[in-house]
Image 1: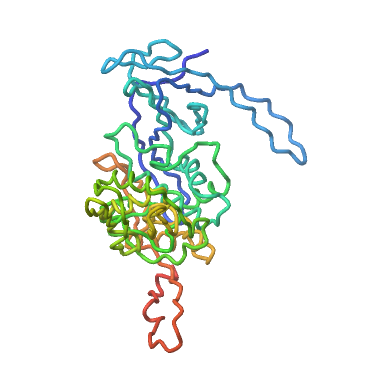
Image 2: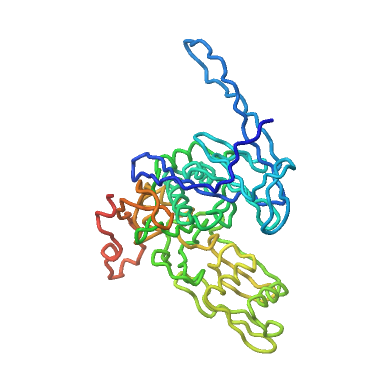
Length: 433
């Protein structure tokens, strides 16, 4: 068994290339994804196989079945501790705290039983091993988009998901850190080659290099499953105001599996969760929503008990609702034992609603209108061929405004003296782009 071509050097960043709109250019941006952290782990590297003999041409040649890859397996562990910790390969001291197998065109590496495109960067961390997949951003998206959205959905919805997934990771590239993102729901779900689908591959190719930008930087393209009919602002959910992550009516997000839901929470759990948010009022007697945010989510919740009154406000109010087990904070509270939580939607509600993207796509809007609706005030940009800036992060170029869809017109009584069309119509140039 020959030794793998590991290097002890840190991964270097390639120049950032990109395309905009319909220009199908691949980006050379590599991203670093933490896919596994464990006391020890197995990395398997394909062994170069001898070329297969060339068969003579036939009139109707079939599609050949590629031979399965053969792998060399390497058990990676740690020897020593603290600053003196070093990685081991199959029990032998490598003499280094980091090892790097660079990505090459078409390269594949298996980490912990899952196959990923690209290479792998291994490092010691707190007595264990971190395995970081170093992969071209477009190949990375092939394992992200179908993990975050059903590949059976319309092309416009898949394309919007591809752009925001690309934007999300581009905004997180930071050479000062050991990795840029993780592979779980804490970041974006990334499951490697096993999840790749033709439809999502096509959406990634069609939007190659495209990102959402604000003030010449990659935007924070947060998304959730279902806004429940009204997106939330970043300020109300996380206490941080972002100009393009605002509360707004979302008539396109409807018909999802969690459009309406109901939860019954026993008093014991309500009391325990309230205690986590600093409520100290003795035995609870009432729990009341006393103020709503602009999106209809609880902004202030008042608790009265045997020994006093307390209030939970701002982002903590929504956090309390979600901690009860609610799938969204867009909810009402009633009763006490049990506390009845009735709500709409699923997820934090900030930014793009995936079921809203589905609704827009079904109404014939393209992915640019989807992005323009959920990130108002942003523009479509591209990963620039100028490479990295002084910070080592991607540079964006070629910005253009995103179009906005026309909102459905509300139904009013015939006697209402309101010019609804004038109040809600948008400039025709936005609609035709």
